[in-house]
Image (cartoon, rainbow, N blue to C red; front, side, top):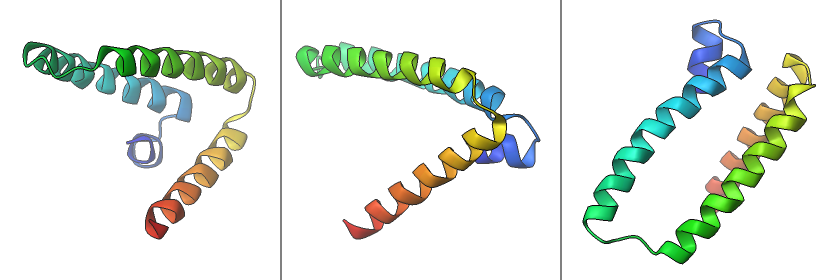
Length: 90
């Protein structure tokens, strides 16, 4: 999603990421409602995941705020390549 928003539409990585996070929030709220109604949530795992994601998001947003667009683009490419290789090897 970030590739399309930043590459094709010409948005910066920070703005593209904020749009991506907003879209993820919308479908997460819908999924949370469905799983809550069906009583399919393991609350202990969910709370731990939420805390870890919140802390990680806060730390990386503070860290990336001072970095340039070029550095962030390079880091994003390295992470994508690493994850693609890892998924390919599994």
